[in-house]
Length: 560
Figure 1 (tube, one colour):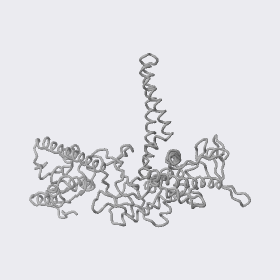
Figure 2: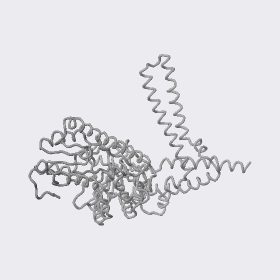
Figure 3: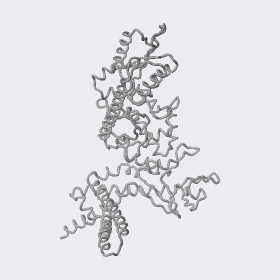
């Protein structure tokens, strides 16, 4: 609001510039925060002008919530425009730090730009007035004070980054806005709690993806149901939401929004932060960091989506099928069916002859004229075989579950099963062989059978092989240990499999919860790879152990 409608000749037309940053609020402490508050600065500057006979206020410029590390501030830019147009010939600030903390740019403005425009500069508490300042003040005192202010800004930035990293590593949420599906706890603003309405939308999005809908189809369905997109939902709740993503004038759901939700681990209770960082404390632009540098902390809050369902969706996103012309969803086997020879996905084809429709799948490579064969298989044949396979293992799961209970009742330890596991035994034998070969290299080098270069090459090869085998052995042992500690139901979500015994026709949900991939070879030969295949293999070992080591020994003792 301009206050000099009746200008007096020979008077300075002053711009009162006020600034308060978030850093001042968060770091400086209550006393300094109050002294730097906008109201305090305004009152000080007005009182100063009242005491001057040759200064009148042209306008007041306030940048509230802007860092002094750079001059990219809206009100500062407006003030600069007024200076350049000749409306302002005096700038008054509380002190040099309120003007800015970038000592190079601040010095350039005060010592070069403002004198060129015949603009007087006053910093009240620093006792600096360019009209009366001598050479020492202009050339030494001001640059030093600007340098100190810049150093302070850099120090504050470092402290904030350090504090933020500690909070992230502790699993505290430090974002300005909670992810869609959550809200900040009233008791602890660094803790996420479920927002029931939005969480239900998130569950629907994951369920629709598992059903086979493409990302675009999910977005279209959300829009057709008039469900508010994340930005509009937050605004409807009164949140002053700002997003780094571009939005249309009337924001709607988009495929990219849907994908961001489907790939966000926050929905399984894992806090993922630190995906970006600022270039420097002076530059606001942020750069993406590699995933290896993200900070992930598990089990920081209640998940909305089961880990198993999240895992299924990540796999399906690699083969996000397009909806057909007559349906918003992809085909039943999209993302699961692959050619056994070239590894390409199988594609769905519909053949109509004399009003009879036949649906079958063929190799994508062959369909595009590539070097492979058709591998054709009817959809109905495929559905029948896969459903029977799932139901067979579902029944076995029930048996294995009972066996596990029996083993635990008999106080059989997982170590006993590990010793019995022939797969682990074979891997251990192979590990011992490579370890012995690696050890013998020293003797071969000493005897001159191999040179130094060959020694290093084979030493690395055998070492890597030993590491791989050791990891595999430990992984196999861990599966058995987890099954003993948590039970089969917790390990494979057995309730999903139980449902298959009552299902008459294969559907997308059952396929997603049970199958990892289906490989089609020529002559309609199928390889059905189940989810939890490693767990199934271990349960077979337990069943065999129970039959041979427990029941046979029990019968032997009874006969004896």
